[in-house]
Image (cartoon, rainbow, N blue to C red):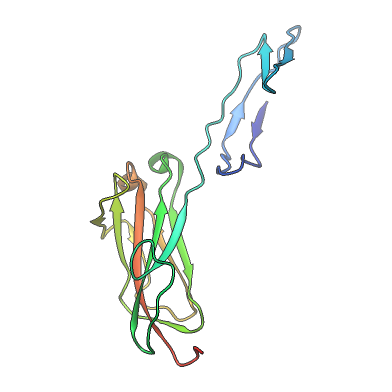
Length: 171
C-alpha cells in the first residue's frame, strides 16, 4: 500500500511523493492518547513525511523593507521581490518560479530584470544563468523561472529586481 499527502500542515508545502507501507496479518497496534494531546503508538514503526516550509515571498519598492514610495510620472521605480528557496530545492523540485503582476498604472522598463542569490540570507551576489526572464512585458504579468536545481542547492534567498514607470492612467 501507499499513501500520498493531499494537504500539508499550515505553513508547509504538500509533499506529493508516494509513501509505501505494509499491513501485516496478526499484528496489532495500540494507540494511547497522552495528557499533552499527543499520541503514542506501540507495535509499529511510524512513517515520517518531511515537509518543506512554504517559502516566504516579499515585494518592496525602492529598497528592501519599504512598501510604499512617492514618484512622478515617467520616473523609474525599482521593485524588489525577495523569496526564500526551499532547503530541498536541489533534489525535490524541477523548477522554481517567481511570478509578478504589475498594476495597470505601471509600465515595465525593458531589459530591467536582474537576479541575485544569497547563501547566508543576507549577502547577495549576481546570478546570471540557470533561469529565464522576459526582456519585455506586454500583459502586466511575468515569470522568472529557475530551472537549474543543482545551482540553487544551498541558496537561501533569491532577489529579483525590475523597473517600471508610472504611466498616465494613474490618478
